[in-house]
Amino acid sequence: MIYFELLLEFAKIGLFTFGGGYAMIAMIEHAVVEKKQWITHDDMMNITVIAESTPGPIAINCATFVGYRRGGLLGALLATLGMILPSFVIIYLISLYFDRFLTLVWFANAFKGIKLAVGVLILDAAVTMIKKMQKKPLPRLLMLGACCLMLCVNAFSLRLSSVAVMLLGGLVSLSVFLIQGSGAQKGGTK
Amino acid sequence: MTYLELFLGFLRVGCFAFGGAYGALPLIRDIVLSYGWLTEEQLSAMIAVSESTPGPIMVNLATFVGSQEAGLPGALLATFAVVLPSFLIILLLTAVLKNALKNRYVQALLRGMKPSVIGIVLAMGVWMILKNVFLSLSAPTADWRALVITALSLFLMFGAEPLFRKKPSPIALICTAAICGAILYGI
Image (tube, rainbow over all chains, first blue to last red):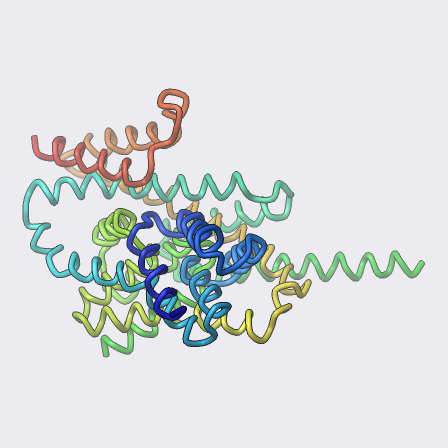
């Protein structure tokens, strides 16, 4: 039964993969390419690129893709459901008791420490992404520009959403592409 | 209308969350702070919990916020909303618009959006660290603990690689910070 297998396999991935995002891609690849051979390695590369270019959780993008390939719409639904189910149950249970735990002094203190580490984790995620970024002037400029803009937004409590900043970056890149394109065309006709 | 707000808020996260879990955090922060669902403190705690439990971080955060705001129905609704856009987009791309992403204008747009997301994440990390350290230092009872734990975390993440041969995993860093917090703030 492919439907049941899809649900079960993705539930396993959802249950045993910590860290989300890119950590999950490795697990998914192992499960669906090597073990189950549901899709090929090339498919996996493709879906990784697609996942990076589309919004939403990367693991969900992968689950939907693999599920659709093996079992159509129902397969896509079940694979996605399998991916979500374990963490949903775990997080829901934690959320029921979380506030009560925070009234314990040592637990609250531990979370004061954790709060400080989360900033460092986010900084590390950014640094890792910067290292993988294209080493070209325009992406670097956009990255720095977006960073400075968001720091100002935070420092002066401006009302500008991060989505607007992201879309602005996209529009700048598109404009540069169009201007360069028209320039190249003019050059070509000479 | 908490239910509608939860649904719309996390639908927005699902629609605009480029760059994986950490890419989505600034957007999630925007939304949970503007609706007043969480304080900055609670958000940090939940990011740590989501990072330390299995499953996609974005989904974990949606479930957590939904449950805190409106119980089980809220959790279901927020989780559904955060997943829906990517589910539909992938179906659309694999079934119908197979070449949409190869379109050169789409590519040009994405080439600008990706580095911008990285810059936004960088700003959030830098801002959180600065705020944590300076707020506690400028408080009437200047607090050195935040500085110590932040410095230790920074060292472990960026300076300890030659020492221990590899970077600590996020969970290892969270555990270390938790122990330091429990000890330092306890004395």
